[in-house]
Image 1 (cartoon, one colour):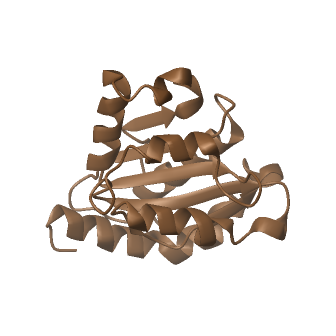
Image 2 (image 1 turned 180 degrees about the horizontal axis):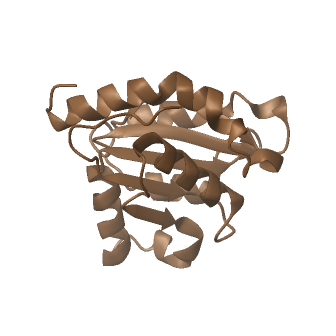
Length: 177
């Protein structure tokens, strides 16, 4: 995959809903964000490190993270597959976003799983939620846990969506593509 050209470098966030900190899901999401824009994300939110703060709606730190993620030009939202869907941890965080306006950038749904049986989970569960929250989504990506550190597991998907991501992010910034 050739690196997409962005006239203005987008603000990129990663949100990971794995209950285990520093997980394979985090590694996968960071890889996807970096591959899409050619540099490391500006913000990485590993929800496992926030613990009970996610349940405290008055927590100013979590409120600020929500604002930063909502303002990002591109956000990779990642979760392991639990019972054919995303984790409750991720849902708790995403519940803080106002429907239709919470996410203002391009949202990339990414899920990892143990086998191919749930390969459609990003499309059937996570993508509709990100759409509902206002994100402009691209086709979701499902990666097998065992291949999370293999760049070839991402290559075909990256080739298929990179131009769409560039166009959508550039349009959001109001700069001609």
